[in-house]
Length: 125
Image (cartoon, rainbow, N blue to C red; front, side):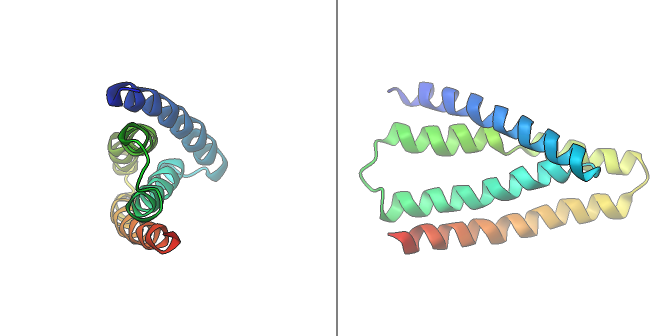
């Protein structure tokens, strides 16, 4: 399969997953950004895990599969634009502390789980 097609199909799937999960979690939590936080954190973990597995266990998979999963699915699943929009909504509602906590919390936790995912993927190899 051509890599651009794998990325496009994966991106469509990842975007739908993000919509369903982010909308559902935000509605249940009642907190702006709860769903976006969840998808960005799980996406950070999954990209680390995927890269670790490709590095160690899945060394022979075709490039289109890795690109379709990483760039496509996980690229469509996570989103910087929704992350920023959620922070802006907090600011517009006068919740500056919540905006800053959300922005930096997502970065810190995202980095930590990406490193954990990479370590787990490498260890599985």
